Length: 84
Image (cartoon, rainbow, N blue to C red; front, top):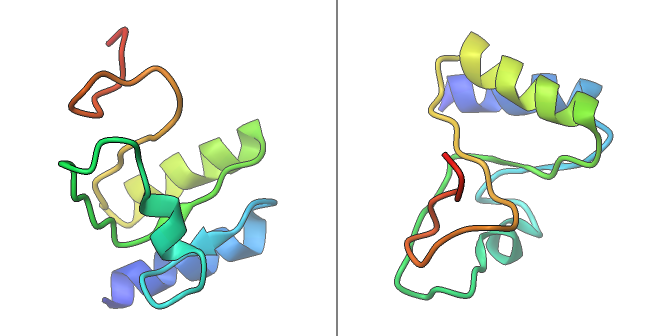
């Protein structure tokens, strides 16, 4: 978990949006999606508000060798991003 904590700490220093770990308030609500069949439990959630937040999240994932997934609009029934 040290890598996750380090990534979260680094992101909290540079992001305008917040960063949620499973023990933080707001984490559970960040996971809610319309398709209840999908049960992803990410190690952390970066609530990106700006382009710089997105870049910071991608950089942190790369630096800490963490898998990365995005969530936004335009997903299909299996919550895969459309247009890829």
